Amino acid sequence: MARRPRRLKNEINVVPYIDVMLVLLVIFMVAAPMMQTGSVDLPAVDKANLVPNDPLRVEVSASGELKITDASGLSRAINKAELAAALAVEKEKNPQLAVLVAGDKAASYESVLNVLDEIKALDFERVGLETGRK
Image (cartoon, rainbow, N blue to C red; front, side):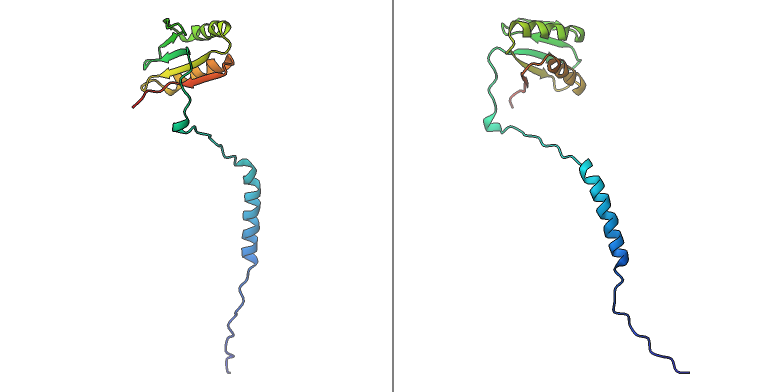
């Protein structure tokens, strides 16, 4: 009995590839609305704003202690509970007052954010972080 020679099959079965492609398409369609990219508009160094005149300065020390310095240069140590009241008094005196937060390098990130949160709660419009010069 003679064997018939095998014919080579020159076709590629694309059905599994289409199935995979459709599954990936569904995954991307579901995942795309969930991916939100945040954009940060960083200021250019040569266009940095100048320090405002007579700002209210809130210092956060490395140990988390707070000190507030008003526009006249009078500074006093305060605790976290007194911060909101002190800021409210200063805002009452001058609603357009600028506030600078000076956090020590060794201060915890959380303590600086707590101060910024208190300032935000009182709706100060001009708030900045004070930095040193190199």
